Image (cartoon, rainbow, N blue to C red; front, side, top):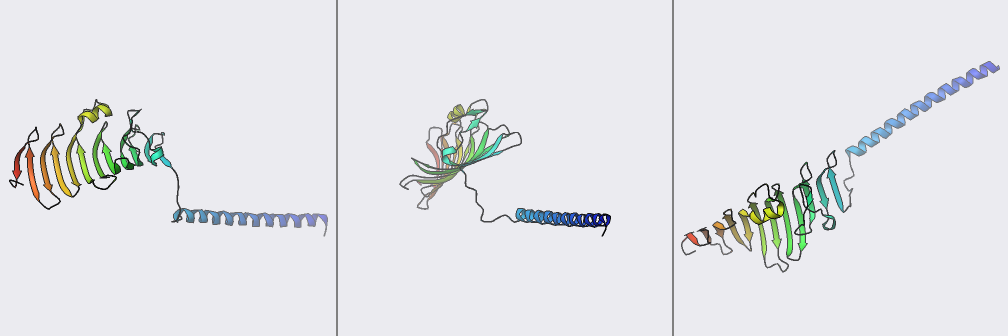
Length: 219
């Protein structure tokens, strides 16, 4: 074989080898892509994430949700100001587009007992809440729904807490089932109750707490 013929043969082999490598690379790429898509569509059902806190933010970096343990639970934030919290629970906090707290779910083991709460807020105070509370010795237990009055919008949360009262409470306290409706000052004015003995009664009260109507009479 002449030198020229040898060169032509070598070039032909190189071209063939390059084609084979391209085909192999293409097949490998397709296989990896298929594997990635399969993994994305079928996540490991046994996978776990173990962290102390997760912050969910919007595209501008504003927090919209926080999931945290008690040690790293955020303080309430209203109009950019952080305020003291009555207890240090673990749970989830929701925020509006300005980063102000608007509700959440919390679970706490405090000195006064166990408390679990789900609440949604007015701009400056709690609006509605579901809660359970059990004393340390288990002698006092309550599960209920509370709907609060809306305080004036110009009050900060601390001042709002002094003037906003619960207007409606639906609760079971130590097996006494009650619906309580209060006036704007937080004074009970209507009570509907079925007590732990199964006795039912309705009471209407005046502003001083005196019963002005009761049914059945003598109940």
